[in-house]
Image (cartoon, rainbow, N blue to C red; front, side, top):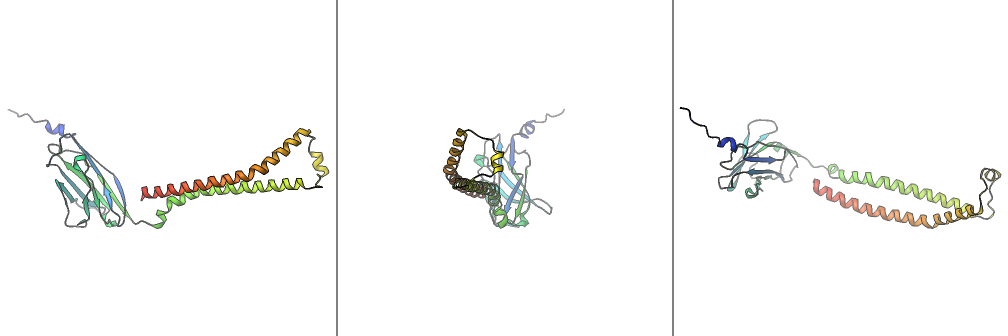
Length: 242
């Protein structure tokens, strides 16, 4: 007589889900967090365990570097001795850890494993840790890029406008000089215009003389405001990235 096989294992196969960052970048000597979150269909109990295992970039067997059950048990041997701390909260589904003073030799693959009986079957997400040296050029990349993209075109436009306005002012001053007459060629090329057109031209020239300086000043003020905003944005970007 055959025995019935319980199907509880099939149901539990999908009752525990784990999520972890596929790739984490870190800088030498700066603490880095390895995020891991989980969802269990069963209530959290003292039987819940968290295990972090590690395999070097050069390959080899996986080794356990952290264990949690009610309290954290960081490894006391190996390369991560006294350098791994618990930053998770199982009540909130957080099983994250932090590595102090990472070095390039720490590069490798980390696996977060959670068991919350009867939920013991779950996916196996892997996190690749990449530790590099922070350089001055990398720190300034965002600020230099923003300055080049925003400041340089603005400065070129303002300079060109100022030069153009200066030429217009010079032409207007030459026209206003007494005894300045047009040559016969200029007179023959230009069609005769009514008196009203001459008045409109004078009004336009007068407006250019009055508005141009204030407009240029307004451009410079807006450019200064934009510069302040870009500096603030670059600082925020550096805080987010680094």
